[in-house]
Length: 424
Image 1 (cartoon, helix red, strand yellow):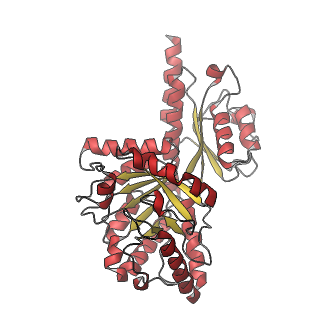
Image 2 (cartoon, helix red, strand yellow; image 1 turned 180 degrees about the vertical axis):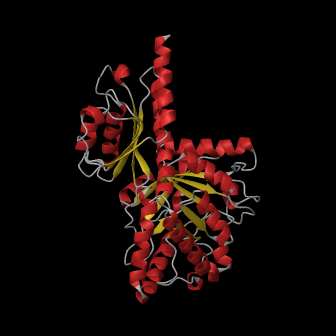
Image 3 (cartoon, one colour; image 1 turned 90 degrees about the horizontal axis):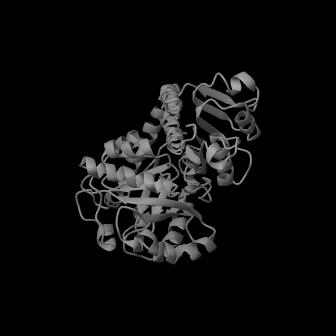
């Protein structure tokens, strides 16, 4: 669901005092991130943490089970099953500063690539050093684009990596942050982490979070400089899926319950308010991604139709019309996207997916959509001459839901632009 929000507690193995953590069956974050910029015995720390969490769960494991079900939807965007944690405890996810901090004792790992700097060691070097060990561990891996945002202080990450953060206070800097985030998703990252840094004076500005959210569809993680529930909720409202807090809880562990109460209250209120308006907003966001695919077709002198397929709020397949390029009358945008989505999920059926396409599917594509058992179809402009409604109104799965007219004018204008150019 679009509006589910989660809170992650970040623990540094070199600093965290497990005995001081006020975690119980009633007070628990959705996720626990473990890592730091310098070091520490991560393996020993995670083992101790698991023992501590398992001991705390015994009070009321039902609440923790409900919490894990609640938070699982957020990380499903990143490819996680939501079953990372064991024995009713919150999932422990590594947030490694280097290859040396990896341990198979955790449940999952943010496979970080520092995209905001120019240091190849943290762009790919540390990843190469840890790749074989991580693969052999069979651990759940979340490829993550890590982007440092200037929070007003020099952080340990900046010192260790020798890189500078991106400036969130200028138009040029914000555009660079947006472009870097888009690049992260295009490179296949399943999450984007906007990091103001440990001890930041100012958090990532809400307007930056909102701008990144508008251009990306993967899990958006935000951390650094968050010291009040109001700042946390502002990040959620701007589009953050997961807010990460570390330093503040090291100094004020007693405030964890206050933040959790605010986070759950915020999410509950948003979910109550969500409905047609929230769905429409999500539909427009994904239709714009389909329009971006249509623009690719237009640039290749193809009829400009674009398509994306979404599952758990994550794009799992993209495609645009390629009939001229491939000399193949079946190479429609929907067919390309269905093939890509099936390859992503490793199966031919897509019963939990929504297909977004800029123009009403034709009879052929409607048949393919039906065979793929896609649950929901959203299209922009109607096609009264060749659309499924005229030729194959029953081609979709019997339980499929159809939404039409999303960004209809923009989708229609793109088609008109193409055919007008052909008449000249």
